[in-house]
Every structure is written in structure tokens, then in C-alpha cells.
Length: 252
Image (spheres, rainbow, N blue to C red):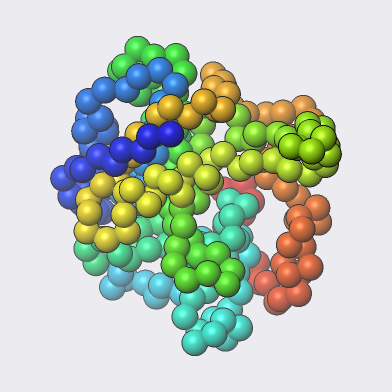
């Protein structure tokens, strides 16, 4: 697998031209995946709120589906939230590299990913292409952030090992690989978290990707990317804290 970040000009809130920014991609070959930071997608959509016009916590609660109050978090450092079936701090609301604005996640990240996918496929005359909209998040008992796929389009998200044999003939019962988040982590590492100005990464030579030309909608629920809360192995932890409902509906 090869991951190459692309340097661009500063992308300026509250609104800038995303199509022009994507012109920094000079070439795309078949079977590539384009990772793009959620922040620039949101700026392209004008999803920016002046920081002096609202309280950040109020905005986070409005954007979250579920949230955990600061008082339950060590040093009251963040508001933990669930948004778009992702557990993430602050419902994606960010003020870094934002020039005095709070930048939200795209309103409908999957629709945004599909639009980028369609535009790039047409421009470069290719059939097989994946798009990932990325952000970063913390993981339990680890310092630092890793990438997460806010949305993806153009490929199947799981590599399924269930029913296959391991090195010693034992059949896997539960093992699947999360492709969007794995690729997002690799991309975010190359793109950087600071002043690198590299909001796009091209990922190539990923042999196990199965590209598709429509939204991934498996008939078998066991192949769905999103897991119902009650089936998640983290269910005991998710239900042991006092989540409150935020202002964002599940279908936003």
C-alpha cells in the first residue's frame, strides 16, 4: 500500500471552493482511494460558525446525537459524543486551523463523499475509485489520535474472514477487517494534524479492496458496517454512563 499526501494552499473558512482545492490532484489511476479531511469538505459546504457568536459546548450538544457531560470526563477536557454512529469528542466540532470559526462535520458526510466520488471519476475517466472523508479521534488507554472514516463511498467496507481457516486450520468466527477506518488512519498519519496543509491523500496498491459503483447496502445484516449498539462488544461500557440526547437526529 502506498499513501501520498498532497499539499494545497490554505483553505479558508467560512466558505471556500472545494472543487478548486481538489484540482491539486493531478492524476488518479484505477483502483485508487482518495482520502480528504472532513474539515475542508465542511469549509467547502460553508459549515462554519463564528466562534464569537456561540458557546462551543452549546454547539457540540446541538450537533451530537448523544453526549456525555464534561463533569464525567477527567479534567473536564472534552464532551464525548456519538455522531453518525461514531464515538468522537465534540461531535466533530473543531477550532484548529479554523481562523476564528468552529467547523462542523459535513451535514451528510456520505452524500458529500458520493459527490466527490462522482466528480473525480468523471474528471479522470476511471471506473474504480474509493473516497474517504477523514477526521481524527482518541482511542481508550492510548495517548494521541488516529484517523477515522467519517464517511466512505465506492468500495465494500469489510474484509470478512469468518468461515475461513487460520494458519493452523482453525476457522474464524468473528474476524472482519474495518477497511475505511484502517485506510483513514494511514491517510491521516501522512496528512498530519498541524500546519502541514495536506488535507488530501491518495492511497494506491491496496490489493484487497472490492470496488463498487453504488452505495454499500448488504442484504445480510452481519455484513453491515455499522453495528447496532446492543450487538457491540463495547455495549457494557456504552450503557454504563449517563448519555444525554443531543440536538442532532439519527437521520441528519
